[in-house]
Length: 284
Image (cartoon, rainbow, N blue to C red):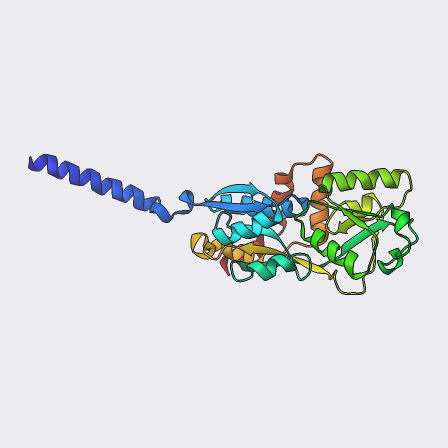
């Protein structure tokens, strides 16, 4: 009887030792980092790099897709941990007013990104003010994105503020770009929602229209972080509080993928080129 008890205790001790060596319930191997991804490709370079770095540290990674409203709500509820898609001060101003106390801002991945209504350079209009009285030139339409996108909300405000007889047409990024491609191929006027980083600015030779009332500011792309994430994954929390990648690198990634390149290969090369910076980000 004593021998059986001693064997049982020994097995229990071995089990506890193995569990402790693996880090128990708080180990990286047992942690899944959930990264949000809204339907915009400019988030992908940051996501790919972060995924690789998290996996290097022993975390598993899950990517959860959804629209902008879903991302903000999920940062609050913890359904996602991090999301590299917050645009401030202008694009997501409405969402920020609602959620600013419910999640944490991380680093500005890059700052002062050009954004606004865009037209092909052959269109002889340079500002939103000049659209007034010329709405028919564009068939009275601004070709837009998904209905919940921050740029759509701001665009509605701009139509009212400038008293434009224009309809904001919702759709998807891909449908908007398809219309832009056709219009440019026919040398026809069109207004779409434009931003950098994106390949559209070069592919369709676009210009951003001046906007004097302050609705479009040069925004920053910022990490959003669930408030409990620092305890869950301290190193990756440090990463997204310090992460930087310039617009040119973003557009290089997008062109690479658009031309059939592997996104993970590009991300791995970027990591190796910035390894010293990244090590510093992870530890501070």
